[in-house]
Image (cartoon, rainbow, N blue to C red; front, side, top):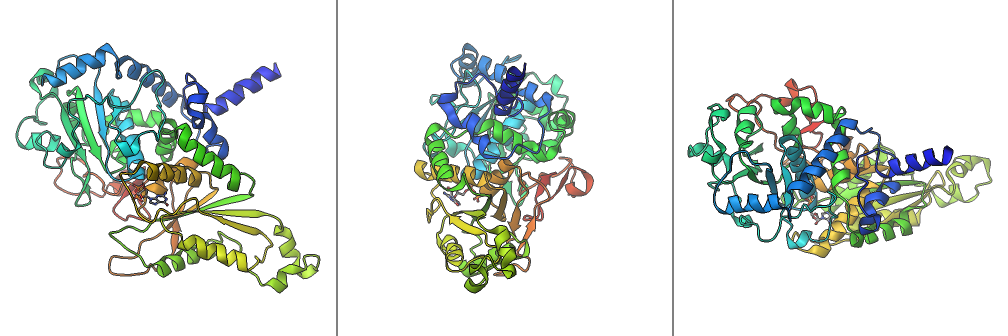
Length: 494
Ligand code: GDP
């Protein structure tokens, strides 16, 4: 029956080969099933094992999530300061840190950690993040209820006495004893994991078996991170086998998890869809430029613009400019080249807080024709000038732009930017990265390099073998990680 098999394949496509659950009402979150229609099919097939694991997780989340008897019981224990033995449900509560790109990377890492350690992922949603994402788990919520007892983000810092590293120091917990001999009820009611970058390393260096065995005994874990720590989970021996089954292609970890978890709400989807349909839907090729200037490493506009243009030329990302005379008479043999590209439209989508790059590139293709006869159309959805971590409207635009970038066929991005990492991983394309000048220089000799992986970069790797005093180069000993093109000491899966 042809029509039945077509219908199955269409709905399978919509669910991204089983990545997405089918249980949702489509209209409540249109982006969930529509966003991917704007992209080429994923280059990475989903492992059936990961799909199975996600369905099992969804059932667990529904059983233990907010609004359930089990959740209420677990919160009661937490309030009473007790860590119960044999608890049916365990939780990891994510707290935000930094901008949207960072947050998406850490939510995905925390979710992966939850999958590996049988915890329910709950998210502290601050005002600026409200209404950005749809619920990813059917029949339940990932939003931490407002009356959660440990709801104060101010308490979550490197010196917090409840942090695992500090609990080890003060002998509240030990990682040199057999965890089986430690009753869960002898432990504090929750543990805080501070997975932030500190002196270029992850501060709570817990990616080893002894620590994980002990951490597994806590029913409640609170986690704050500024880093894409998923690669660190791959370095933890006890998770290795499970991760290999979930991700036969390690390059696709964020690609799959991100596309599973993050779906812009109808409001944000409206911004994305309107922009896409107005400017990008009918072009022949879409090229995204993401220019991020970090306050800690300011780069002059002229220098950044020159570097971008060098990259464009060297990598032939955009058609060369011609002169008006060479491109007017397309019937002439001498202009056969021009005729070949004639009428083709390349769209350049610029994401940047500033409008200068857009103005210059647009002006260039407005004033001069291209040698090939292709048309270059340049767009920039917004230029917010300032980063505003606490504005909800600002974050809606940022999310919309991450999505619009992720629909591009090619992406060129600023080094170090998690905003760009999310976009190219969603897209499943390897970006060109505009390298950061060395610390004592204003310009970079190399304009850009092609990333060798579609995975985001972990800027601050953990120390391999937690008790080892020696600092081993992880990339030299693990075949599935390498150093990042933009952050030399960073690590990425490939
Ligand atoms: P990173 O700092 O580049 O790693 O990315 P983050 O997303 O974590 O933080 C940067 C924040 O600045 C974003 O979340 C936005 O709020 C804002 N921002 C930076 N670049 C852009 C841009 O091109 N467009 C928009 N709309 N916002 C941006």
